[in-house]
Image (cartoon, rainbow, N blue to C red; front, side, top):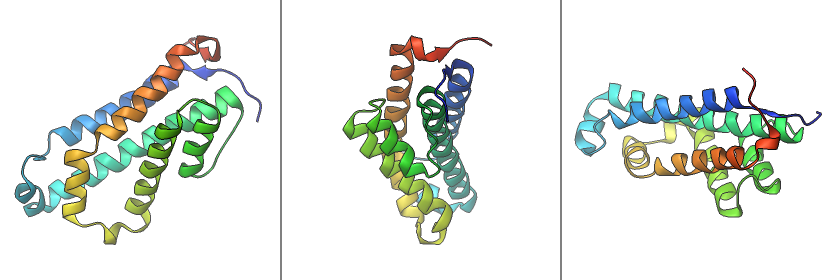
Amino acid sequence: MTPGRVKAATVMHKAGQVREMLDGLSRLPLHDPQAFSEDPVVGAAAESYLRRALEALMDLGRHVLAKGFGEGPSEYKEIAVSLGRMDVLNEADAALMAQLAGYRNRMVHFYDEISSAELFEICAHQVGDVRRILAALLMWVRDNPERVDTAI
């Protein structure tokens, strides 16, 4: 793969998807574990919002790698490792993104092992991690305008 320029439109679209999913999560009863667990629709919505936020975040990272560096990792954890290796993310953020990728994989492949209590805990207290990685990716884009294609 040949490096080119990261497309600003793609970055904004993916960032918007992450934010939209996190906004959806924020409308759920994340202040009350009982209300969260009593309604199976709430848990299903939370799982969908969280999974889609994580997937959009990983897709954004993959886009930065593919267009900015000519790298195309196929697995979500590899995206985090490559972003760290390319200094898009610092070591701590790359490790955190790898954890997020691992959780997304658990949600998809081992969905039956994730309890309502675990999902509540993550949605209520740890979605800031998603925001942190999104902010770090957007900061890299902002700080590297020579690697960004702003054409529509």
